[in-house]
Image (tube, rainbow, N blue to C red):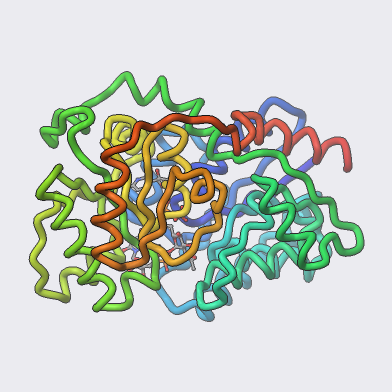
Length: 358
Ligand code: UD1
Ligand code: UDP
């Protein structure tokens, strides 16, 4: 069996690292395609090196343009290589423009698609990710859901359509967190180099378009983080998109901004933080994996079970809600009761399912 895996953005490298390790245990040829969407060393190469992901056979070098142009250029490049490679299956992850481009290219050529992280919904069609994931789900053959919520979302939309398979396999990011945790623990330089004391700093990230592209929202979020800083330091490995936006403004910044870090350093930052404040999808779950509360700077989340379980509070860009959530979590002890994400077997479940059905 021959699989073409299409990835391009940071979280996809981490997810693919987990699934590719499972693929390597079987008699499957995997060809990695990097669309080029993320390209800085610490947004791309570092993940391939640290997580030992196979070098991409193709790098399409598409990045930094608007949604239509980016997706269109990727689509063109992916179609061309699919015609040469003629794989039995295309593997896609999540909800980025790289995901959508691969979905369109694959479906037009009638090549079966396996979508990892299918069925997630924010119910906010203004998010580019929501559009990408809905369209990708519709044309995929295998919809590998990470949670029961995702299964329910699909059923509510009338899935499965003809020749589709929907299955809750668990979350591949949990596989990654569990696998790389002990490897990460071997090198704690990220804490030492930034004078971070375990349990005595908060970890924050901001990158989502709806936050960074709205100057007022961004200002309020930075204000909120500055305020939390008065109680405990806030460390922010800053996405280049947000860095550019902050540079254009003249904001008072008390938080500690560092360059984006590799996954192993990130695991150490999460593990040793006091709590996590973010608008990232992946980080909300990683906070849970490492027993940290999470304050989410969004109006809605795809990971609703964390909110319902009181591990996560949605605060949007409301500074007061942020401060109140921080105060609330400061009084609570983190006690994990549920296992929402399958316990680290998602990647193997995916590969076994594909082999069984093919
Ligand atoms: C993309 C995904 C988002 C995901 C995020 C993960 C889409 C629509 N969005 O958002 O779902 O959560 O990746 O991080 O696909 N940039 C650099 N260097 C890089 C990468 C990006 O400077 O290595 C800058 C460029 O100015 C670029 C901007 O960041 O234009 C935005 O990058 P892009 O890939 O379009 O979107 P993300 O915000 O990263
Ligand atoms: N991440 C990382 N280094 C960083 C910031 C994030 O390795 O400097 C990891 C993070 O731990 C998670 C993934 O990148 O595994 C999440 O990616 P991101 O927040 O960019 O995207 P999202 O999950 O929101 O799509």
